[in-house]
Image (cartoon, rainbow, N blue to C red; front, side, top):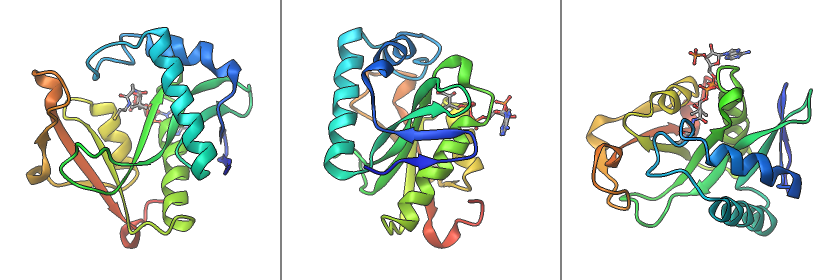
Length: 181
Ligand SMILES: CC(C)(COP(=O)(O)OP(=O)(O)OC[C@H]1O[C@@H](n2cnc3c(N)ncnc32)[C@H](O)[C@@H]1OP(=O)(O)O)[C@@H](O)C(=O)NCCC(=O)NCCS
């Protein structure tokens, strides 16, 4: 499996020791503000198992993110084909960090590594990012990556319960436009 290194971070496979902090992160209402609900311990464990299986099978996917200087697990970042329920196809980048790890530039640093991997190793023509319209922190990461948003592509994600979380935005970065990376 591919391991990605940045100045401050290591993106690697999931370890059993990641599960405790991963469960805590997903049980934090602030981290889950833009999702329908916090996750139970069982849901967090199941997601880590899926991420682990995806990385084992393909060599890339949703990596666990560690701060190199401290060894601390802070969340995930990675790439995955967009879900079949979406009104488009492609490969999306994503990220989710524990609240104390926000505000350090870690999400953007990890995202740049995964997007670069997508272009240079997977030879993707384009990487997408998708979030609920009100998730301004995540949208800021997308902008820092040099991604652009076309308002005409906004849509309602019907897999999300009715309400403000449904409105969804799509950001795109074409390989030929990746000057920010
Ligand atoms: C989305 C999320 C990953 C963004 O994290 P983030 O820390 O705000 O994003 P970045 O890594 O780009 O960090 C940028 C911030 O770090 C600051 N920063 C501090 N040191 C920095 C450094 N050395 N380099 C770059 N930025 C630095 C920037 O000034 C900026 O601060 P600001 O938020 O006050 O403007 C985080 O809010 C999160 O995990 N949210 C919950 C899960 C979620 O919604 N995921 C996305 C679903 S689509």
